[in-house]
Image (cartoon, rainbow over all chains, first blue to last red; front, side, top):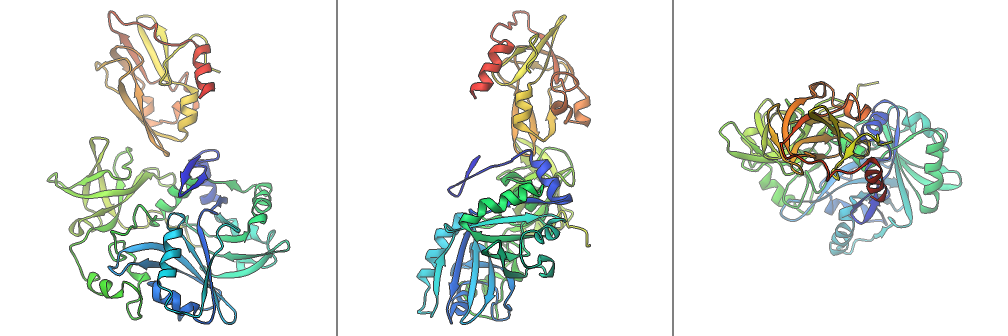
Length: 345
Length: 126
């Protein structure tokens, strides 16, 4: 068990590799109740979100989910979030934020409440959230809910029932596999995971969550994202819509074209020693050109992979770098991300 | 589950005296804690090692840990099979998954090592 943003979470139930393979080949479940869950409702909830999120919300239809960033005035990233348009009148939205940023984002919304006719509620403590991921996850959902997750498009969401409880299901995840996530009333969390256990779904810990998201090259706040990094450096420019007004837009208009800031890259190892967070990266002259933000042996690929920030000139795919792994250099090559992409069905 | 004929170091290595050398490996407790071992780095034949100091590293998906020399001496042999398949250590830590043979230094002592019973008590207390 480890402390993760104030919640005790298991690193592994059986073994990281077994849990990882279960998700890639079958399915696994993750307790992600530590994530922050907010609801915004009211006629101007969308305007409030649009003012704070980098993505456009006016063209997000009801029943759809979108990945977005929240930036400071200087364009650096406060958090990465999922925003759900739940529809209805006058309008309801859900926001899932990182556990470590929950208080910060709640305060950020309150501090930037420009008299919008809308209210914000933090429902994290009253609810639980579970992710079921893997090629078999969607067909399993039929046994649990009164609506069929197979009808949801990728990044679609709907309200359904788990027994008598109203739940929010979305076809989203953080593993690179198909699957879904569900927010349930807190008192239903245990019975849900008991049903998953009974159905033979593998329980997965934080360790597998990290190796799965790393293979899929998904950034993790506190590693690839921080208040020192802007969306363009992180390679997330597609989540920024400069055609609308939002906090950080003016800074991002200037930062977009900059070519002097470190950028996020993928790295694959030639050897077997895995570079880990904070390991230095050197170029062929021995000059320091960057630093690893996440790294592991990839259970699917069989060799170590890493994400790092490097000077822009060293970020083109195929560039050789040395990672200083516990004092000794290991050869890594920059590569296109993601490292792993599921095969189309 | 820890074989009675072996000696054990606090840092979770086992030692089997075999003629004029000592075979060294990792205990079942250690490999179970590490899980998913992906890579093992061992010293080279002829290298001198010092009891209690690092002589290699074992990497799992979860983390990297040092392997400590359980006694003073010189590396007489290394288990080359591990460079091809590090998971041998997890499958058979007291047999095929041995790490190195150490030729003990002249005044080398083993009396700081624990019996199976003492070691089991240490790990159960952990």
